[in-house]
Length: 499
Image 1 (cartoon, rainbow, N blue to C red):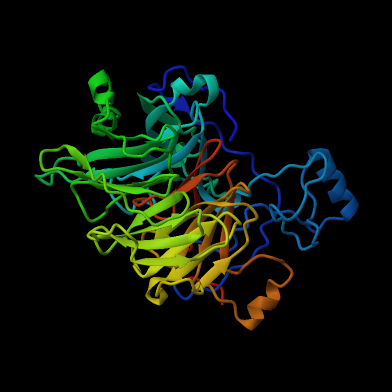
Image 2 (image 1 turned 180 degrees about the horizontal axis):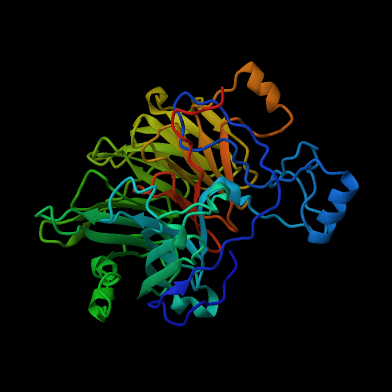
């Protein structure tokens, strides 16, 4: 990932997040997919399109050449497929803004390899609340001689306005003054001395149930250390102007030094409110760190061992507090029980011939696990079929649409048929596993080669690294790469589908 010029000298001041891309003057010709589960997004969502508009070819082509617009793709079917088709000299891609409910890009002084979305006290199910506000935490990637400039960034994104709809331009709207406003990024920075490989947040509920929760972060750095911070005061400072964060509040609560190499695997247990953390490194070792009753942190020096290469991802079971899974560049996923005295995996399953980079355990259907590998293939596995041994089980779904490594994968928090995937081909894709085309629909889409019917939406993020669903703003996603991208495809009116 390339470096970016700093947008602000002080990370604690509000920064303009940039402007929306210009609309693309093309028609949206994709149809809708029938979905018995009434999925959250329309299927008329291929976001980069090129095609004819009914005018004479000479007139249209002359205008496109003058404007530097894109031509019909190589297949002649009116759909430009990123990674399949090539742009000619002078051509460029622009998003079809008509497919978005929300779309904003926000820049940070340095790009971020990893981030997490933080639950807030603004309420759930706020899909109709504009302008939207959200809170995130991320670690930067400042390399070389400027490595000392790395920081943990606690951020507030606000002023995230809704896209203006064509049929609302002349109507009175309660939020019409919010349309097209520039988003604001406010940040509080905690100095770090190394690049952040992975960061995850965890919230400890207050004892009285009325006060805000304590928000902790675990940051795995390129130096091999894992830092635990309390960012509660940083979050509270956004709503209390003039608050000064003290140097003591920027210091980590604990520094885990058990790892002898750097790593990328990190996860908080969702079933241990006080805080239980797993971390994995490039030596194939996994360590468990637990918060004590007194508020301190203890790391068990007995590592979980079994992988023959680096541990790339760790996920706690959403249902069993003692169970977790790990994915590795040795091509396996292993399932463990922290109560095991042997510290060996209970099940080892080969799922790929190459590195397994990322993994996501469904919170709703807990026998489903999704993985993504270095060849751009991602799949869904039924854990009930895993028996162990050297025989590779068959995934219940597998897709090779992406042509570069899968860098992030995440189940939708409230719909176990929806998955978001990010990859090294600069794409974030949204998938609905419940979609199955009948024979008639298959004929209608037969001209679009290599486009699985389960692919609902494609969004471009330069150097895409991670993607997360926002747990409180339905259908909204945040992705990071060269910059942050906050987007929400146009939601379906539930119960209304093309038949």
